[in-house]
Length: 328
Image (cartoon, rainbow, N blue to C red):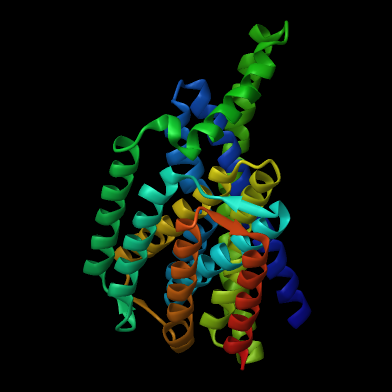
C-alpha cells in the first residue's frame, strides 16, 4: 500500500511537470503564430508558465480541504528555487553573471513581493482580504515590468528570440506554406494535453500527499514544503541549468526572480481568495525564516553582479541544512 502511493506520487509529479512543460512550449508557439511580441511572450507565458505546477497543486489542495499545503508549497518552492536551482546552476555554469538591469528592477521587486508575503503570513494564516492585496500587488508588479523598462535589456527578449528562431526553421523549409496549418493544429493538441496532464497530476499528487501523511504520521506541510516543492520546481531547474550552460545568465536568474515573485503573490493570492490559508508549525517557524535568509543571500549575491560556483555550493549545503532541520 505504501509503495503504491509513493509510485502514484512520483508519477503524478512527473505528469504535473510534463504537463506544464507541454503547455508552456505550445503556448509559446501559439503566441508567435498570433504575432505576440517576444517581450510579452517572455514575461507572460514563460515567466508565469514555469509556476503552473505550483498553481495547479495549490488549487487542488484547497479543493481537497488541505489549505495548509498552499503556503508550505510556496515557501518550499521559493527556497528550492534559490538554494537548489540557483545553487546547481552556479555550480554547473561555474558562475552566474547578473546584469545591471536585473539588479535595478527585478531584485527590488523580488524583495518587495517577498516582504509582502511575509507581512501577511507572519501571524500564521493568510485571509481572503490579504490574498486580494497580494493579487493586486502582482498586477502592479506585472504592469511595471511590462511598461517601465527597456525591452532590449530584458532577459525575456532572449527567450522570445529563441522562440522565433524555432519558427524560422520551419519557415526556411520549402513546404512551410503547406505544413504551417498542421503545426498550428498540433500546438493546440499539445496545449490541451498539457492542461489535462497538469490538472490530473495535481489532483493525484495532493491525494498521495494526504495519504502518505496519514501512513507515515508526517505533517502534510512537511511533505509539501519538501517533496512537492522540489517536484514543482523542476521546470525552473531545467530552464536555469540549460541557460547557465549556454551562458544566458539573464534567463537563468530572471527565470527564478519572476517565478518567486509570482509564487509569493499569485500562488498564495488565487487560492487565498477562495479559502483562508493556514501555515503549519514547521512552515511558520522554519520555512519562513529560511526563505527570508535565502532571499537576502540571493539579493546580496545579485548586487555583487556575480554568483560564483563556491557560492552555489554553499546554497546547496544550506538547503541540506534546511531539510535536516525540518526532519529533526
